[in-house]
Image 1 (cartoon, helix red, strand yellow):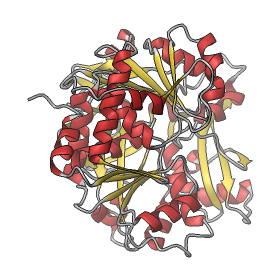
Image 2 (tube, rainbow, N blue to C red):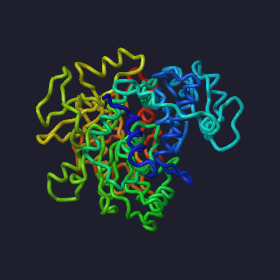
Image 3 (cartoon, rainbow, N blue to C red):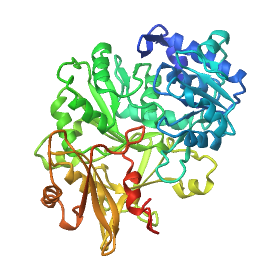
Image 4 (cartoon, rainbow, N blue to C red):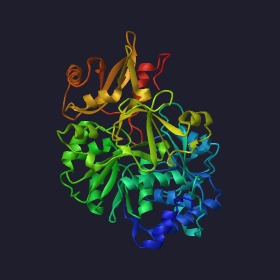
Length: 522
């Protein structure tokens, strides 16, 4: 049989229909209720014109309806277009038109943009209101659609059928639509579960935005294993700690900035979070100082790192809990800097500019192949051919692999700084800078230099109540890395520009420095 995302729903309906599938505030739905609601949504979408493979959008914060949207669109044979909630109306309209999304589910937070989106988008035809207030004029009501529509049979999409178009963040130019199949999403989920399986009593907290690939992946794994998902509409450290305590959450995914905010929360020591057994972190690099802080503050919690990209359907390397040890052993220290080893079902190589595999320990581009890799970029044949060459997905990440197959990320190709003919990897400088006790967050970028071509520039957010000067931080770096790698200039900020998924937006930091230059950093 073909791999089908909805097969997981049939399995749970057969084996645990009365068990709780999703929790959101006061809403609790069993697997039987989830399947019924999803099948009704599928019928409503089909009646509104959704054909097999048609895209259906969702512009909303996390809720139980996000899970029903995923299941309902797949049940009805459609494909997802989960819209980035940080985008402007013009960017939202671009993504809708780019992949011809005609139906959009929209919540209270964004319902006021409905008329503007209708004006900006040429594709958008139907708006479905999923909020709790009065339905805006010209929109259909979600709950009313479910009440008045009979559940339909599963359409049966699977294999290489399109499951969703996931737009990259648009950090350079227009965002690209990543096409992922049923087989791709399921293969990644199964490969990850082979590395860190959900237990029989697992309760998953969806705190990261579900529109982002990482946030959706943990829910797909919950479908596969039939586990309960507790949904938060957004990240708030107090609300998250309260929810972990109340719902006895055992597992969650957090980006590093979320981990930092959780550990710094005044309620951290007040809440009983003893049920929490495992955190997977990823989507952006984590500093060694924060990692050590988390290991010390959460002694009963296993940490797992996931490294991947939208184009691979989720994490394609995993650093397991046994590699997260605070130790003086050189190998333990080394493994803490690793992104882990490729997940089951994924091949990975380190290659040179000609695509030739490099010996272990040498730095090159990370490439991969496997069932989880994307079908391609929507309507972007040239970009697809540039990314997938000879069957290998080129990540744009620089790294190396050791003799045991552990992968170490050195930098993004586009983030490498070339200063005076020397290659400087920003991640290495950030790692050194991040060990200073006063540094809460940092980013290292290239700025123009008449003398050297590019110079190393650091943007720093200091911990609350702490101080540090540029000279002090530069001196600290010199004790850890070569002098030519140390920042030449510093900029101190209160906050960093972050995407909806918590990723640092380095292009925003670069823009003021390069806007009047012919040469641009990507």
